[in-house]
Length: 238
Length: 253
Image 1 (cartoon, each protein chain N blue to C red):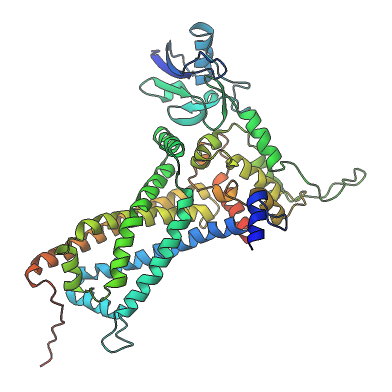
Image 2 (tube, each protein chain N blue to C red):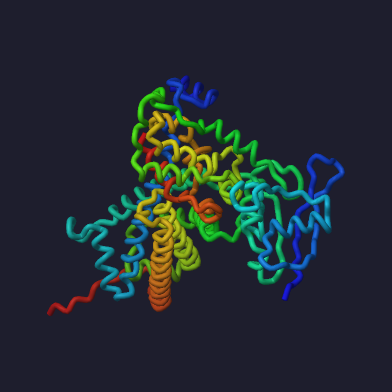
């Protein structure tokens, strides 16, 4: 039997000076296997054309549909409405990012700044000679790098972080994870001392309070707990 | 030195155009001072609980800390010295830990709302830690100053008189709860922070660590409460002889 669910969403358009923050309530009939992404699409198609929220892939890959769902930062496309037994779901935009409108936030600019800040690219040890066979990277090391590369930059780790909530210059788990990825990568020539120049301050690794909300809310289950601890151990030794 | 500081405060980099190593040292020292204090508390509460085994046991422990095996009859000065060292570490730890506190209305509001909405276990543990940490600024200072200045007033009767007749028990009750919670959460967070027991399965080991520390914390709270109740009881029974010191009754003929 399908039930009626109630979705409450924060509505506000910062670029419209007449807009005031309000909570809009939508009632709709739940369908089997309904995700919040599907529910939001239904609301936008048939109840409120003005409601804004982001999505691209619908499959937990693009990281665009992050929002606060009943208090927790999650991806709308990976959240089933059936999880909420009382059928009441409250949606808020991700904090720490610039609000575009309603549930839509600008994670892109934040992530771009983070990437530039942590030099999120390989600084190669040597010029690659394409006429020669590539140097072998141990499979375990390659696997470890690939594992950290699975980050989709959804911003849930930043939105769940108490430091990031309080201090907007904090690099976040996504940034620390990125630095760890290059620190592990044998192609990268940078030393720990170079990485210290990037994250060796209270806006970087020493701002992290190890509350592990990043680890607990990461939709890709990245090993943030152990990698942040790893980077911290490295950075205090520099 | 001043010129170095001027350069760093303006540029955010040292005169060598590198980032300062001070934040790394502060982060390490915050953990190190916390660990020292936590280990101190672990033993302190056990020694204090010697009252549960009788007045003689507590008296023997007191005399041991007065180094009676070293100086005949022992001397309370050693308690003062220990209290001074712990007080210094305590103040330094508070100074370092304060850096993480929410320090404006907006930071406080954002943190409070965030924690309330998210209902996340470790975030809530930290809220407990900053609350108890704030309480300890005052409670810990009262206790440490008392020990520093009145080291001779420790013993089965002297301590009980302080607890009951001098009305220290409400303070000690709050101190006990806040210090045990603060140390318990603190040790758990230290283990997470430095990844000490990550092993092959950090997620599983985290749950295991949390469970073990939770059990130990509850045991310490129970031991501490029973000790305090015992001191209150002795203090109540001893109220008419306030000021009298305990003497070990020997059975020598």
